[in-house]
Image (cartoon, rainbow, N blue to C red; front, top):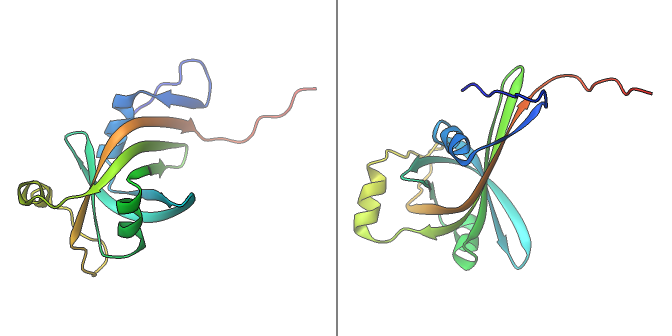
Length: 144
């Protein structure tokens, strides 16, 4: 994906559409949950569909925390030799339990990366999305 930095600024704020395209083209990120004001972060693989993100998980801290407090952050990024990008999504997470919803998500082909049982599907519905694209390079000399 090509990004045009028209003003010469190495940091470009992305539109919602550009940010979503990056999320749709990526399959890994980090999920941030919070319980009692304490944040926790988990690497996850995911799939996007119809403007939502889906991941699988097993019983444990991640699942327990997002059922207590559904407000989550999700971050994905990419780094190449001369450019990078980062997208942060604020959303609401819920564990899917309706059999029709589960059947739809199963069709997306989301597979666990590690050979462990991950029987729970989580849907993240976005509230807000922000993205940035970076042109990488050395720090400029300071003019005196």
